[in-house]
Image 1 (cartoon, rainbow, N blue to C red):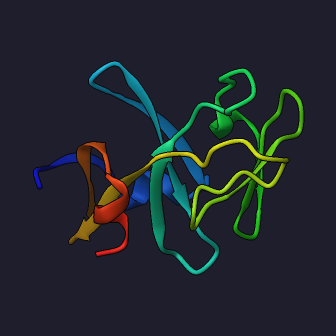
Image 2 (tube, rainbow, N blue to C red):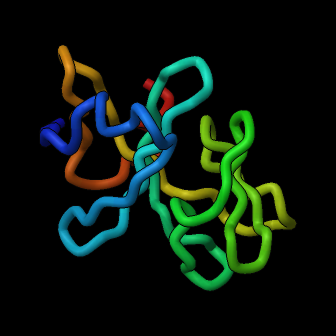
Length: 111
């Protein structure tokens, strides 16, 4: 699987989430309270509002538009039966964050 450099860890010193565009897709990088990072789709499943404009508490991000909530570790929507956000592979090398060019398949998520 190919990874591309997306950001520096220091880009998250004053914030916990940022949005990026990769191959015309909006991808959010989220920093957990323990300092780990997650990469996933950043469009809310309700109306595609950018989740990185919402607020984050613990492992949950809440959409600023209508309050839909998502677990950052799993991508699971906590509001009804909406499908989970697709996750991207992410790794830290030195001071940089790298993510996969596309979302992970279900099999890759559990490797």
